[in-house]
Amino acid sequence: MTIAISRRGRIGVLQIDRPAARNALDDQLLDALIGAVESMRDDSHVRALVLTGAGTVFCAGDDLKAALTATRAQFAATIRRLQTLSVALLDLGKPTVAAMNGPAFGGGLELALNCDVRIATADFQCATPEVQLGLTPTNAATVLLPLIIGHSNARRMLLSGARFDARWCLQAGLIDEVTTAADLLPRAVAIAEELSSGAPLALAATHRLLNAPLRETLQCALEAEEEVCVAAHGAEALAGVRAFLAKEPTPWN
Image (tube, rainbow, N blue to C red; front, side):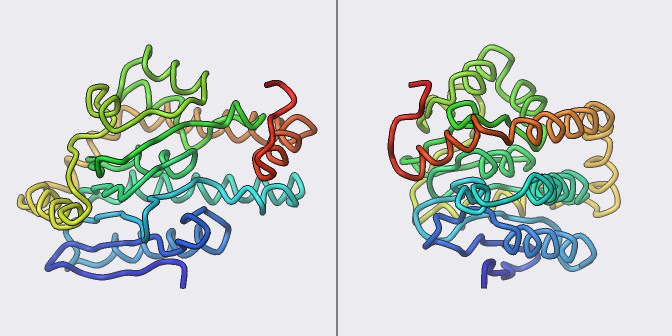
């Protein structure tokens, strides 16, 4: 099993359950997440969704071991899966809360950006480390990050690939609340219940309206990011990923 699905009343809880791999996103996990989100979209008894992780890491991002051996076509297919999941979260029509039980990197952070509210534990860290690996962001991070934390903070994150702690993220607006590990899920469920207390059809319509101005921009960003990211899947990226997995300096450091 790569995901765990449960219900807290009318709140669906979707847990990424691959802790031995730091909840890294491979094709099997992505397919399971897409199916689960679509199932919750179609379940009239689910009024909101909480996305969290098992263990001490929310999501380490893409499974780089798989990326290292993937052909360009396979790499492109994985990116499309990531983007399908992001669009499914944005188009859910129900409030979403990311309950980040630990660090979120790359694609893992990008999933949280697609949620309406993000809360985290005090030991939370995040990064968009793609440039350090010879890769580029995807999942519309180049659009969503500037909208959420402003252009200056977003450029700092995306261009440096540096790590940022919970305190910085709270001040920047990347996360909305910091809580303890024990209180994380109950607090996320409480926020989800608050967000979903309105009339279901009105909530769904409001959710669509909130995302409507972004739809064209997001689609353009997703297409551009896929094209650039696949094109970047060459010698530089392979060298960066190999160095990262071997815990060695990259050629450009």
